[in-house]
Length: 376
Image 1 (cartoon, rainbow, N blue to C red):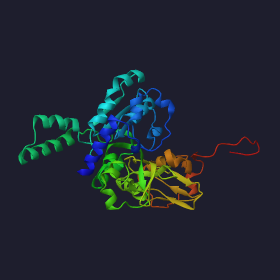
Image 2: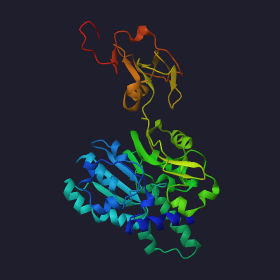
Image 3: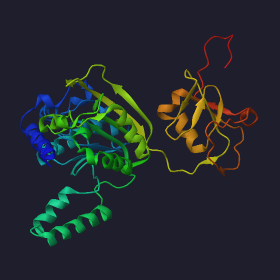
Image 4: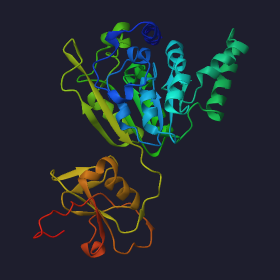
């Protein structure tokens, strides 16, 4: 509990007065900062800019929203059809973010930002509702504690703060490292729960090149300073894969560490990932060709793609491999005549016969050149 209290206290101080040690330099899009109040900018703490991954129409969830800077930046990108939800457990930060909601709604042309009180490791619990319930039903003995726990469990099931499969994009800016190690796996599972099938994550955070020893983790100042709670760089990726995400990647990696403590390098990164769609694996005759340059690659679902081979895929995998982050690496082939759908997921490395894809439509192919002697 000492670590959790150190985080609350330090960020409450950060809501009152700027704390330079809580962030590292970030090159934000200046055009999105123009309409933001100076106080929101000054009292925001982060290590990256996940707003760069926001698309028009997105429903965005910002974990550990703090002053609301990323939320108000994202609100300009989602447009009138989109929505931004910022979640934080710190009342002082929430008060700061909510303070400017009317002003920002007027500037944006609509009220498309909402701030809620909750824990990022348990996105179902509405802490505002918990606060109100405790005023009415205070805990003063074991029986009242058990009653409260039962009520909270029912609330989480019947009225979750963030619904299952409701978010297009989850972002966060240097807060995953503040969650206790025992809750980190649950936190990533919760992110997976709330993201829509086909939805994405863009997480800016601090990682370490080595495992952080316990005596550093026990230091409240290092923990609340976004250092000693950092995930090890390989573990960060592996934990998102274990939760069920695919296309997990470091999209940003600072070459220089932000801090070095006892020889351990702590640096800013941004991880991106996608939640696979829940569609059945139906084979209608698709194939994909991995362009290279590597001799073969594997995806997070265990499929293998040798360079230059027409690999059989189901329709769901075909869409995943030819769109989004995979799209630049693969050529997709849709057969001239689609087969009758059959429930089938091709074993790793299954080659689609050329006869089945001849005359089909190719996606992701190179553009025709302007040389009249060359053909497409």
